[in-house]
Length: 292
Image (cartoon, rainbow, N blue to C red):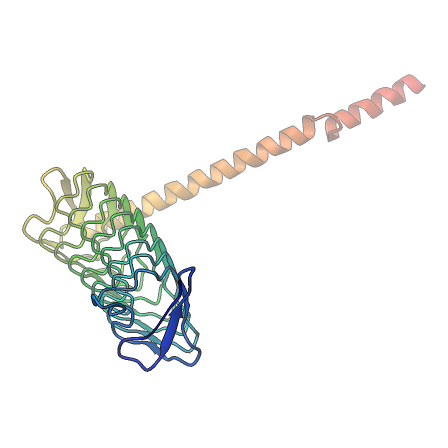
């Protein structure tokens, strides 16, 4: 059964069809604040909405625009969008993947908080700020790669992401704020670059699977920045950089060695195979000798 209603804070009427799909009208320049949050009489999100088409005329997704749209499974954000508001997709508990376009520079507070089914998110290099609680309690998120454009990871940005196992922090980051990864109980590895000068209170508290971590001596540590189960090694930034370069060289050498062995194997198989160069030459010589 389809539903047609006027969007909150807007003069636009939209229809969510029987399949849960909604196509926003062409010419719309922004998805209004709390557009679908006040869909029904209980002032809750649109439970029927599963997929949505956003036109390329849209440049902004307002605060709480899709808040509590608990059946929304996927969202294609057009490249025209430059801002995603606070709590824009908060508590979209069926949302599994989202592609953030390269036009976005900031992921606002609570933008994807409590998206408990979110498994993957691609953060583009255009993003310079990940604000507080942006991915709070995204309990299915397993890995995240933070682009080298980000300078700080705000408080509680990934708090309670209990499935998160690996995170790569770029050398551009100088601060990991309070509770940023608190409660990421499956986190096994995190690489903290020598550029980091501050790690806030409880930033990695409750990361029970994080057994060891290396932190620059120049970084200040907040109260309980790490759990008691984590062994923290302090090294100077110079030593950390030297180790990073050594690891990079080792990986490069290993890949080159694997490639060389692979091509050697192919060459030997080609040479020795039936009809290969060596056997063909031997057969021709044998036939020539017997013909005389």
